[in-house]
Length: 79
Image 1 (cartoon, helix red, strand yellow):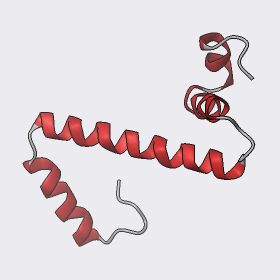
Image 2 (cartoon, one colour; image 1 turned 180 degrees about the vertical axis):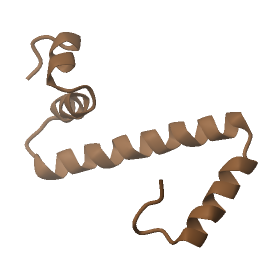
Image 3 (cartoon, rainbow, N blue to C red; image 1 turned 60 degrees about the vertical axis):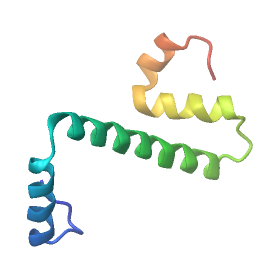
Image 4 (cartoon, rainbow, N blue to C red; image 1 turned 90 degrees about the vertical axis):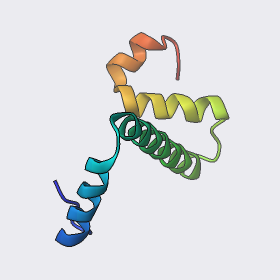
């Protein structure tokens, strides 16, 4: 699936690069991208809620990632 802001030629070039990578390199890239997305999400939470402590901001991120029900089961008593 191609992003709306990516041309077809760019998308194809990106796919060729991914296909040329080893499996381990693709896993490492996926892990890095996931970490980057979490960092951006956490920065957004902190920007919207400057009053949150570090712990509160991490709880908010975990709640986004897990959903309310699983978050409540995983971290009972958290705000």
